[in-house]
Length: 200
Image 1 (cartoon, rainbow, N blue to C red):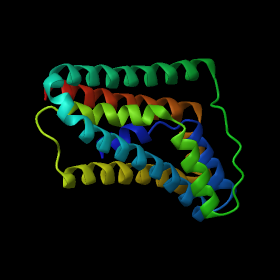
Image 2: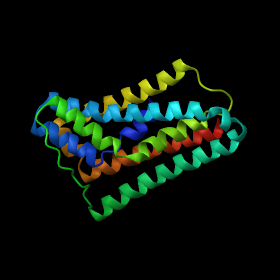
Image 3: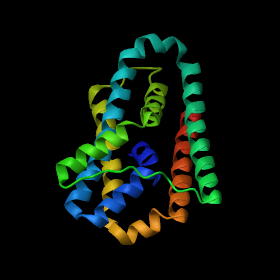
Image 4: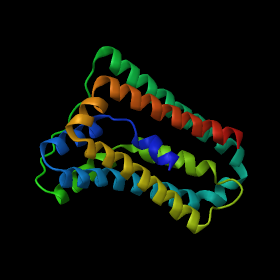
């Protein structure tokens, strides 16, 4: 779940669009859009787990270097996220807003699923976490299923919080200060995961 929150928390273009859509339409439409974002995160978590399991036998001999590479990837993602957030906050740059025309929950879900799937950093993030743990043994199926489910639940709970807040929460979290704060918290979570891998 910590991994899920790490990738879900930054309120960028998709988060701002989700809040705006909910405020403009209804809770049902916003909740469907939120679940579209979470579904994409769940898909990427599943891809990372399945791919990691398939590669595990070949990766066992290089478990040590792989762990270090995963730590570097996670630390780079954390630093890049924090640096981008600070730069955007200082320059007043607004995230580009995609035009999404939705009239119902199903179309909202599909639109936000598609938008979120276009972010390859998500699968890189989950893959780095999963592959780092492939050294000693292949995780059993329940552990894989739990990882994917927890990533989905974490993402869904955060996206539903954004949608549920509507216009009020939108002014707080999708404004310049809110975007900076959520991005920095997310970067700290990702960096903590990297440190845990390094020490574990």
